[in-house]
Every structure is written in C-alpha cells, then in structure tokens.
Image 1 (cartoon, rainbow, N blue to C red):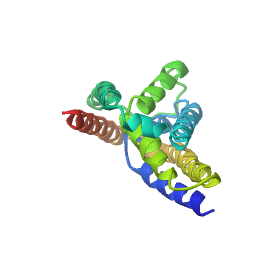
Image 2 (image 1 turned 90 degrees about the horizontal axis):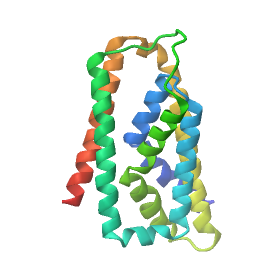
Image 3 (image 1 turned 135 degrees about the vertical axis):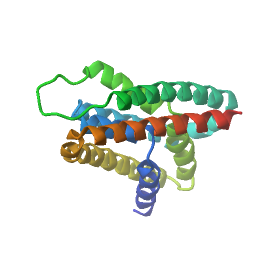
Image 4 (image 1 turned 45 degrees about the horizontal axis):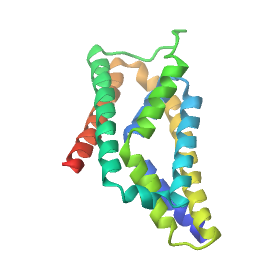
Length: 201
C-alpha cells in the first residue's frame, strides 16, 4: 500500500494546483453546464495519461524536444484564445439564474474540455513525464499501485470540484461574483500561456 499512498499524495498535490483544467471545470460546475460529462472526460483523460506515464511512455516524451516545443506553442495558443473569451464575458457581465435557459451544447462543451485538458503541455509534464518517472522507482506491481493511487486522487478531486461548484451556485447569482470568476479564469489561462511561451524561448 505504500506505493498506492505515495501515488495518491503525489497525484493529489499536482492536480489540486489551480490551472486551466481546474478553472474550466469550476466554471462549468457553477453554470450547471453538462458537469457530469465534463468531470467524466477529465477523469478518463487523466487516467489514460497517467497510464501512459506508468507504462513508460514518459521517458520517450521527455527525450523529444521538438515534440515538447510544438505542444507548448499549441497549448499557449489555445489557452490564449480561451482566456480572451473569458475576458469578453467578464466585460459583458452576467449572473447565474434559475430559469430554463439552455446551457451550452454538449458537443461544444466536451470539445472545450478536451482542448483544455489535452492541449495543455503541463498536463503531459505532470501525468506522463513526472508521474511516469516517479513510478519507475517501484518494481513489479508497485509501479501500477503508484499509478492507481494517482488516478484515485484525480477522480476524487474532479468529483469534489464538480459538486463544490454547484454548492457555490447561489453566490454566482450576483453579477459582480461572475465578473470576478471570469477575470480569474482569464488571468489563469493567460499566465499559463505566457509561462509556456517563455519555456520555449
């Protein structure tokens, strides 16, 4: 169980940090916008990437500087575009209401979820490269117990993020709160995008 606990602690420590994916999930949860499918996609993607890392793919990714730079520029472009959308939303203002206004389409929401998750190189660095390298310290089944611990932490975190966002919904009936959230999301996306660009220069 030591490998499982270490994987859980390390995976939890990495995923709890505020990032593009967490900001996106929280936004969808507050809006009650297809939150269950969004959470499931995040859990499945993280699980798949952690599986790749544990199986040894992390070493191959770390050894390819061209692949790393391409992912960084692509991710920065996507995060910049998404941050711009959040800035526009903050400038327009908004509020969370309880009427029957239709949420954003499921297909568009899922595509955005995949984009925020898979076009962010930090996700690969954390799950595939870092966690994959750390799992190499364990032999035999210990390597996979480490990965299972990380997957468990990821699953619990996204479930809590989705549920917590719904509990915060009454607060977001205030337009000022909504502006703050959109502004924070914008700054988060742009900060990560700038960091990605700087890492390639």
